[in-house]
Image: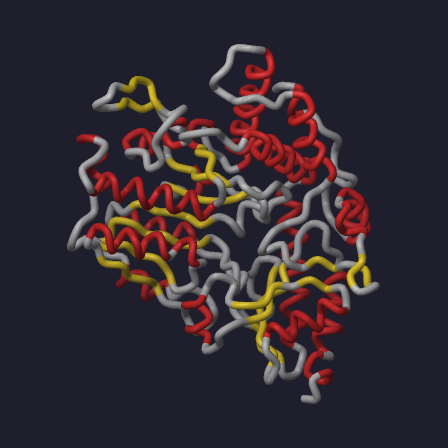
Length: 436
C-alpha cells in the first residue's frame, strides 16, 4: 500500500452510541456551523453526505504532492499519481467484495447505469463481435425494473427498451410498503433479459430481498443490476456474495467527494461488453479505420480520469472501515427505528413505506396532512434542521403512494438520538404552525 493511503483514524471507532457519535462529529467541519442561529442538524445524507477532515486532507494532499495524469507518464509524479489512483480502486473493490478489475470509475452512479445501458445497446447494434452477442436485445425481450426505483435506475432502461425494441416491465409496490414479491414471480419470466432493482429504497428506506430477486433472474438466465447507492454507505455489502451481475454506487453518499462513482461488473461480463465512451487511454491499437480496446476496467475509462476524487473516496472507505460497517449498520438501524416510531406517533403525519417496527434503513419519508413538503422543509430549516423535500427522483413511486412529493429525513454516522428527537419535536409542531 502506498503512503498516499495513510490517514488519521476517525475520532471514534467500534460500536456507535451517542457518546461515540458526538466524538465523530468533531471530524466534520461543516457540522460546527449554525443555520438561522440554530445548531445544524444534518438529516439529508440520502442526497449527499458530509466529509470528514480525513477525506478533505486526502484530496488536498494529492494535489499538493502527486497531481499528474495517470497511466500516461513515466516521470515520478505520474507514477505516484497512478499508484494512488489504482490503490484507490483496490480499496473500493475490497470494500464491496469485488476484484480490482471489476470496478469501473464513473462520474456518479447515474453515469454508471447509463454506461451499462449504452454498452448493452452497442451490443444490440452488433458491436463487440461474437463475444458481445449474448447481450443483444430486441423485440420480444423484456427488461424488468421496479415501481420504487430512483429515476437513474429507470430511465436508462426505458431508453434501452426504446432503442432496441425490447419491452419494459416492472414489479409493483405492495400494500405493506415493500416490493410485491409474489407479483415478481409473474413479471420475471422466460422473456426477461435484465432485472434492475434498488437495494435500499431512497424514499421508503425498505431493504430489498436481493437473494430472492437474484434467484428469480437466474431461473431465466437474466442479468441482474443493483442500485446500491443507499446500501453501500450504510450496510456491509459484498457484491460477489449477493450474486448480482452489475451494481452502481457513488462516493458522495458515503463521506467521499462528488464527481465520482463506480460500476461493478463481474469480470467475465465486462470482458465481453463493448465500450460506450471511446477515445484516449482505453485503446491498445488505433488505425484510421479501426481500434482495439484494452481489457476492463480501462476499456470503459476513456479520457482524463477522476484521480483526486478516487483518492479521497478511498480515504472515506478507510474511515468507514475503521469504524466497522457492522457498527454503522447497527447504529443506523436504531436511528431508523427511532425515526419511524416517532413519525408514526405524530397526529396528522403519514409515515411512508414499511410500518414502524419493520426492518428499514436509517431514513424515513413522510407526508404532513394539509402542508406541502416544501413548507415543511423550510420551517424545519429555520430550526437548523436540514431535510430533503420533493419527489426524490422517484415520481412513479410517489404516484403509487397517491402523493406528488414528501419530506425525507436520512441519518448517518454523525447523527445522534438528540438530532432525531429535535427533528421529531419540530415536525410535531408543523401543523400547528400553519394553523391546522
